[in-house]
Length: 354
Image 1 (cartoon, rainbow, N blue to C red):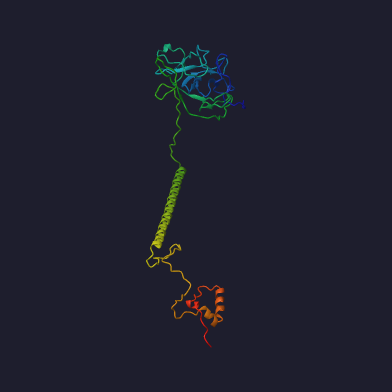
Image 2 (cartoon, rainbow, N blue to C red):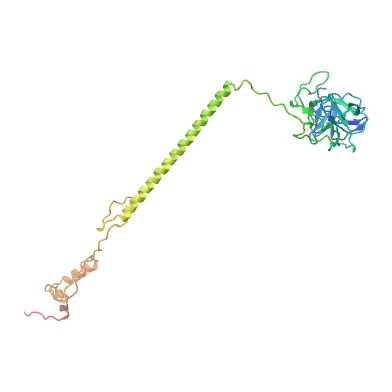
């Protein structure tokens, strides 16, 4: 027994005596523990072997795991023993009674139900289940047999011999089921709507509130977190201000340099001197440059009484003149030009007598 998983859906479902139900109809527990009612996969199992389908908003009964269909967990289908499932409609403003509604096409699984209502006259109510308007849920079924069931608080299973430790999910909810309408005109077991006061709904219990308020540790944590957040904000603002000051200072420096360059280029006087020193060491020329130096090349006039001797005469009188002249010219003297011969050199000169 200890190896049996009592928290899974396990077993075969029957819609009547030896009448197998559709495979989508699965047990609301493990048949190894005991016979139990069956509902469609993924639906809610309720008390009194009742089921609820959220897709169509249908409260219904289906079958059980007992092939003889005589176990207390097998829902009473009265004369409709071969009907796979029967819808339920709550009788409003009366004692806690639900009437069963047959489905003409007898579908094997849940579909949009046929119209169903509770007769006003109690004498006309033939198939009745005694249950309050709020039928408590016991479990939520998985999608197939062999998977885990989510049992609701107070309904997790145990072996009859000893209680088993439960590890199933526990949820506090209640399923409010009611008839769609109490009037006999075109009423059906239909999905619940927000405006239908007679519709079936599944309210959830809100978690209990913490009446004692925050603990001292939580308060301290809140204060520390707020202080840390304030410090971070101050650091961010300080960084932004510092960045703005640096950019502003750089902008002012750039503007000052631009003005200095403009004054340096356009601020010179007529005499050619700059109004201020080169601020950025641009090396620009300022003022009017002086004329380039020229070699000293004196020119002899024809009427110059102190003209140099003709070359021919100098060569005769000064034997070293030609040597010096050629030596000087041969070494490429800079800034000295040989004087041009005068017109006297063009006339022959007689030697002086004696």
